[in-house]
Image (cartoon, rainbow, N blue to C red; front, side, top):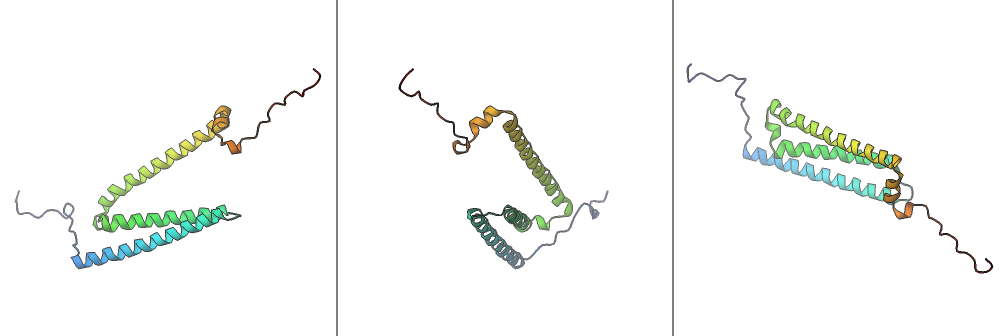
Length: 154
């Protein structure tokens, strides 16, 4: 085999290198974008706090705001991983090698949270002692003290 033979294009992938000025510009742009998204998230968090503090909190509105915050958080994670961790410059197979196990890990967390919630609900439903001992004092019905016998004839 000839040592000077070219390597197959399937094996070697040419990377395009950015100049330092171009990379610094990209980092600055991403930092500004992440800052704007963070300020929006904080404003939404303050709105959620004020809605909860109000006299008639809207559960649907709070749920929608929380959904928007989750989407913005995922967008921030994407930009951080893409630009600062340089994953955006990698080939598709490398990206999938990292992203697919991450999605499985997220599914794993959701499955455990759902299982834990189910266990808690079943324990509260079928174990009255647990429900009685873990309920906060201000939520328990007040037990009337036994009446003392009145002085007099017995």
